[in-house]
Amino acid sequence: MQTYPKYLINLEHLLQVISDSIKHDESVANNDQVLELLFMLHEMNKNYQTAFHILIRMKSKKLFDFMHQVKLDVQLETYLPSLLVIDSKATIDFLMKKYGKYQKTKVLEQCSAIIEEVGEEDDSPETRPEDPRVKDKDYLMHVILHEIVSRGDMEVS
Image (cartoon, rainbow, N blue to C red):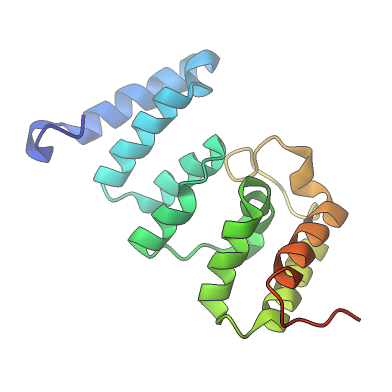
């Protein structure tokens, strides 16, 4: 797929065919190879938000590199729990880059406020993988605290 020039590929048609297959067959919808192909097509078509949703659905750690590469700024209130479950260290790294590495308290406060609201909004399967840890406030706070405190220079009271 990546070896062909983009002008030889009808991206819209391929996206439509794969999307139709996913709607009609549950085994296709859960196939990582199909989802990876769908991600690549959306990335090639510059549909970065949709490509991001596919990586969330796949629980792929490469989503952090993807966000950095395309400079995608996601709505933390929606995605923080899922990002923490996929890779807590990379999530905190992402937040430290976003807020500044010396803003650990700000990152902690922001994350705490978001975690307090976990489970209160309507969760769609596209944005929230079927993982019970995504709704476990205690687990999420533990992960955040562990990642931030393990970086040092942070007093815990």
